[in-house]
Image (cartoon, rainbow, N blue to C red; front, side, top):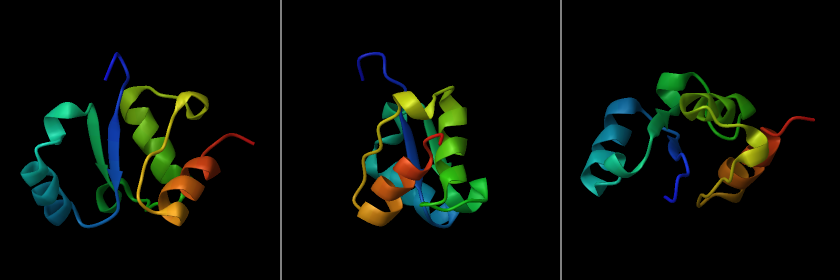
Amino acid sequence: RAGLRTVILTNGVGPMQRAKLDESGCVPLVDAVVISAEAGFSKPHPEAFSFALEQVGGSPEQAVTVGDSLEADAVGGVGALPR
């Protein structure tokens, strides 16, 4: 991670998503996990991204979004940038 703070932001229901993440083995590799059903906002809503950044003290200007959905991940991440 080279000093980077990382967050997994995923849509879905908490127990199901947590089980998937635990099985993947990636949870120890990140600083925070944000599940939309627990946060109150789903991707691509900008508040989902803002909430995820708050968990690690990040700012939108210094964030990179990586995902598998153009609409939910890329468009959502750009939508979280200040206007």
